[in-house]
Image (cartoon, rainbow, N blue to C red; front, side, top):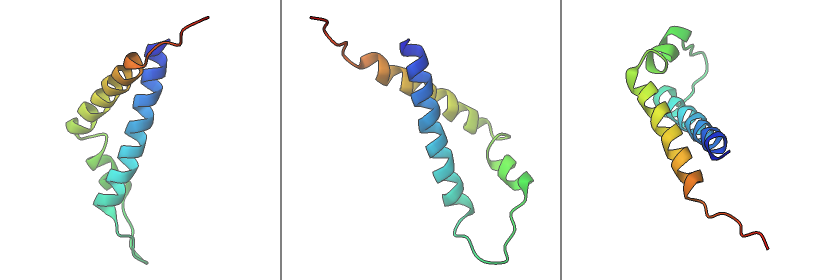
Length: 74
């Protein structure tokens, strides 16, 4: 169960990080400015570091969940 929880936590961390990364790289947003889909995919899914960050966030999420103490049943 901790693998599922860790994977969900890792994907959540990765999603937030990706959104913040895209805002930092593409922003600030100005009127009458278009950004092509090829530019967005070029800095995300076509970049090997993007996938390394994805795997690292999954590992970090699993490590965080695995380190949580178990509740003692009384």
